Every structure is written in structure tokens, then in C-alpha cells.
Amino acid sequence: MKHQEALDYVINKLEELSNYNYASSIIYWDLETGAPKEGIRRASTVLGFYSGESHKILTDQEFNKNLDLLLENLDSLDEINKKIMIEIKKDIDNIKKIPLEEYKKYSELISKAQPIWADAREKNDFSLFLPYLEKIIKYKQKYAEYKGYKEHPYDALLDDYEPGMTVKSLDIFFASLKKQLVPIILKINEKKDFISDKIIKVDYDIEKQKEFSVFAAKYLGFDFDRGLLKESAHPFSMGLNKYDVRMTTRYTIDDMQSSLFGTLHETGHSLYEQNIGEEIWETILGTGNSMGIHESQSRLYENLVGRSLEFWEPIYPKLQEAFPDVLSNVSLEEYHRAINKVEPSLIRVEADELTYSLHIMLRYEIEKELIEGKIKPCDLPKIWNERMKKYLGITPPNDSDGVLQDVHWAAGLFGYFPSYALGSANASQIMNTMKNKLDVDTLLKEGKLEAIKEYLGENIHKYGKLKDPNEIMEISTGETPNSKYYVDYLIEKYSRLYEI
View (spheres, rainbow, N blue to C red):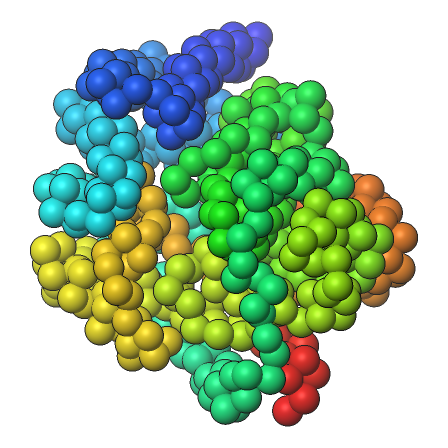
């Protein structure tokens, strides 16, 4: 009876916490998708209040007394409640180390920083964003010390997105990618005109792009009765719960691929959130797992599905119909080659599969050095441009296409970027196993995307955070994460496309 009372008390408080998080998420969504600039100040104050109230719940003495009782008697709980208590304890251990007022001020800071970043990006003026970025970095440095780490301060930030991940492991991972992928990139650079993408670099009507983005999301299986697709400066997804999943993309008149593959990417995230198990969706487990698992779903749909010839076979006529002036005389094979052209890109979200990880490596190195204090935020434009030249052989003409292109730092997401590369590796591993169990190519050719969604739902999505990342990979692939499948996939695909 005592255990049941403690469980009821904790679950009740977690429901209260969920309400604050829901309200905060709605405000964030509004700020990113069209709230008036003059409303930012008040919205930021409200976000700070909600963050403070959440902090109070998690650090409340009575709450923690009941939680500790449950943790001492985990065997009395079912699998779901046991995992809830373990996860909330992790959150509390982290948050209790941060002073309440500092936590509130940080929440206000990042809510103000994101619209400022968008304004700075639009005006190509890094100086507008710099004061906010400096404060965010100082907080992250203090947060790393509050949280604690064994070897590197950046490890504390990585752990928020990839539990247990370390700088030591990532250095090995990126060194391996660099060693194996750079040689093929150099060979392809010698054949840079072998594939033409001129059909992509022309004007595509924005309204038609919007219509096709909605079609593509529906085609993959996104349920618009339980979700939204809007526009923002940087595409993102937000799972409020499985019955309210929101995503954005962005539209550029002279590059339809930006919105199209942005939509496919965010739909991958959103399908994950829409297919969380019914028994956990209202709990803190009712969301995606680590960011490396979440990114595996977006990268799988964006690249392994969306850039395959088989995916386009049944729907390419619809794309031609939407843009007859551009595509009516372009064959499917020519279009498929164009969307897979390898060429160093200024913009990460528009990078080809092969060079994409170099973008992530650049950001990973810069973040490490910022947290270490080796480089100063004011020097970022110069450092960014130097490393773009070093890794990709190109230099951004302005900061909007350089250091200001990603929203992540404005949102305080230091430690997040490596998940994109880890997610790509996980996606290849998951696809390799799925192809051993399903005739994926035939399903794509026949437009039967539902079978793919159901497979991923059954093996990954339904578990939410009930299982740990390595457990999810074991369930879905039979082994722990292995980057071999990613490297093999890229080398095979691009050797074939470029005949090398």
C-alpha cells in the first residue's frame, strides 16, 4: 500500500510536469513559426516561469522522498513504471546540480536567442547573435562542471543526447569515417562533371513545392489528423505527444531539393513520434530515444529511402506533373543521378550523403574547443571559414551561409551535432537488417510505404524511451551500433553512380 501511494504521488507530479512542458513547447513552436517579434520578451518570461516550476517539482523534498522509496523497491513495479523512475532520477540528478535562478535565466536566454539568431541570419550580421551565443556558451561550460565528467567537459554535454558517449569514442568514429570516405571523395572530385544537377538549380514554384511537400509527407505515412507541417528558418520537428506531432521545412525558389529532402527528413522524425506505443505515450517514455536513434529514422527516410531510384519510380510522374516546365523532358534516371550528385556544399542540410559527415565533424571540433575555452565565440566566423576550406575546399561568402546557418547553438543544443553522423550510421545498419527481412526495393517500387513504416514501428518506434539505445539497436539489427554498414553503403552506392 505504501508503495502504491508513493507511485500515485510521483505519477501525479509527473503529470503536472508534463503540463508545464506541453505549455512551454507550444510557446516555442509559436516563436519559431510566426509569433510577432515584439511578443518575444513576454513569451520568454513565461517560459522562464514554466522552467522554474518544473525545476521546483523535480527538486521538491516530498517528491524525491517518494521517488527514492520506489527506487529502493523497483522489483515491486512493472517494466514501464520501473523505467520511468530510473529515467526521472537521471533528470533529477542533473537538474539538482543547477541553481534554480540560473536555470530560469537560461530558459529565458535561449527563448530570446532563437529569434535573434533568425534575424542575424536574415541580415547576415553575426554581431547581432554574438552576445547571446557568448552567454549560452558560458552557461554550457558551467553546466558541464555542475554535471561533472571523467575526462572531457564536452562529455557532459554529449551525454544529454547520446547517453555514455564520449569525446574519446567520437574521435575514433570520425577518424574512421575520414580515413575510409576521403579517398572516394577525392576520386569523385576528379569526376565532378560526371553527373549534372543543373535541373535542380532552377526555379521551382513555391506554392507547388508546398503542395508536393504535403504529398511526400502523406506518402511516407505522416498522419495530418495528428500533425502539422509549417515553415521556419530552420526545419525541425516537435513531438508534443503521438497525437500532436509538428514539423517544419523551408522553401527556396531556386532549389526545390531543400524543401523536399527537408520534409522527408522531418517526416522520419515525426513518424517515430506518431508511432510511440499506446501504453507509454502519456508518460515521460512517450518520445524518441537518444538523438542517434531519432536521427537514424530521419536519415533513413531522407537518404536511404528518399534518394533511392526505387522510391521515385511510382511518384516521379507526379513530380513531373507538378513542375512540367522543368521536369517534363527529364528521365527518372537523370533525376535520380542529379539528386545524388556529390559536390561540396556550404549548407549542411543541403549536403550530399557522402560529404555530410565532414560538416558534422567541423561542428563537433568547434564545439569541443568552445567548451574547452580554446577558441572564442567572436572568432567563430573566421574559424568556421578556415575549416570549411580545409575539409570541403570551399569558403562561405557570408556568415548566413556559414557560421549562422544552424539554429542549434541558439537553442543551446551543444553536443547534439554528432548525433547526425551517428544517426546516419545507425540508419544504414537498420536498413541492412530490414532488407534481410523485407523486400524493401519491391515495396518502394510498388509504393507500399506502409509496410516499411509498420516494420520500423514494431522494431523501434513503439518502444520510445522504454529501451536504451543499444537495446533498440539489438532489437532492430541483432547487434550494437556498427559504422561498417554506413561506410559500406556509401562506398558501394557512390562507386556505382560514379563508375569508379
